[in-house]
Amino acid sequence: MRKKIIVLADIRKKDVCECLKQVKPWLEDRVDILGWYNAFEEIEKAKLPNTDYLILFGGDGLFLGAARATSPYPIPLLGVNFGKLGFLAEVSIDEFFDKMPEILDGQGKIESRMMLECVVERGGVILHKHLGINEVSIKESCGCRMLYTSLSINQEPIISYGGDGVIVATPTGSTAYSLSSGGPVVSPGLDSFIITPICPHLLNLRPLVVGAEHTIQIHFLPPFPDGIVLNIDGQMHFPLETTDRVSVYKACEKFFMLTTGERSFFRILKEKLAWGEGKIKI
Image (tube, rainbow, N blue to C red):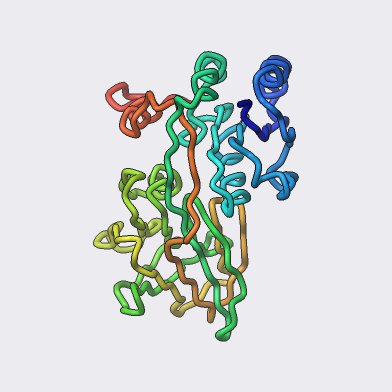
C-alpha cells in the first residue's frame, strides 16, 4: 500500500528549491502526497490523521516547529538536512534517494521523544501554555543587567541564580542552547530535564539534571531588570513581568522521529561535534 505523505520544505534555502525539482517527481511516483507546504503553520490539520509520514527539507528549526504543530498526532517526522549541524534533520539529500525506498518499505526506525510543557501564570491566571521540543529559556531582555531567579522543584525551593538567565532543556535540547551554555549532553532516551544557568555570576552554580517526573518552578527576585523574556525552542517569545511564575513539566504528548536506523545517537554526536577531529562540521 502506498504511504500517505506530507512534505514541508523551507524554500527560503536555495539548495532546497533545487533539490525539490528532483524530489517532487521521485516522490509522486512512489507515494500519495497529501500536500506540499512551505511553513508548518500552513499544514491543514484535517489531513494529519491520515498522514503516515511528514518529510521535512530544511534544518532543525523547521523540524522543531513541525514537531510542535503535529504533536496531537503520532506522525513520524523525517528530516532531510539543509541546515548546519542537523541533530534532528539528520539525513542528507544523497542518503534520501538511497534510503527512502527502504523506509517506505517499513525498514526505517521510529523513535519517540519527550516534550515539555511550559505554563506562565500572572496573578494566579494562566497567561501562556505551550509545548516545547528543545528548551525553555528565560533571560533579561536588554542584555545589560543581571537577572535573579529562584528555582523550585515540586514547590521546594532549591537554588537562586544570578546571571544572564536560566535554561530548562529536554534531552533532545541538551545538544542545543543548553550545550552552548555549558550544560551536559544527555541521551534522548532518558526522560529528564537539564537545568542550565546562563553565564552565572558565581562559579559554584552548575547545571543540574533531574527526572522528568518533577515540575520545575521559576520566579524572579530583586533587583529586577528592565525587561524579561521567555523563549521556547528559540521560536516563540513572550515578555514576562517580575511577578510572573513559570512552570515546566513533562508534556503528555511526544514527538516521533523517523530515521534510517543506521546511526546511533552517539555516532551522530561524534559526526556532528567532530569528536576527536578538533573541528565542528557546519
